[in-house]
Length: 271
Image (cartoon, rainbow, N blue to C red):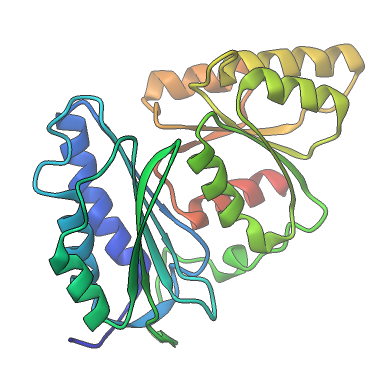
């Protein structure tokens, strides 16, 4: 197998570009997340990593309208690369060629089925490497920033999305609280104190726009300073973003996003 210095995030971006277009054409959704460490260097076979994900997803993953697929890559320092392919319905059985290639790459493959759907997890124990070339799109001081003592409220009806946000923020030492809809977010905000809100827009019971309007109204009634709030959504057309800002959000993050995008948005609001 080819051993090449690369960044896992670059493979993730290539897959995101390819499958986001397919999802849009097939009226489905594809979300790609990179958690801590994906910007750092590794030595391995990035093309084999690409091929594994493509084989798992198949040639036409969005042939059924409305299908939802997620790709999550983690590469924490001192840990192997972990690639999770998540589907809202069962993926086809893992092809023997995938298992064979993963074994030859020194890794493992497992299938996890739960109420959220089916996940195929690939673990690749490729060593870390320091890449010397400078990159304008990486802000090391933001990536390594501490959020110790910052109280963050996350609201998203997807357990997977909540987990991804929690993993992205795990090493920041922020105090995280997660709920599954806007009403729960409003209720827990009323009972506690938070420095930052990360609210999904499309949620059952109460959506993110209604939730932020209720929170802003309560702040006025209580004479409180506004809590920094980020709309986290796949619906990010210009007119939609304008509506979020009018409702009371400070900014937005368009799904799918990378950890560095999340950290940049948070630290910008914290200044």
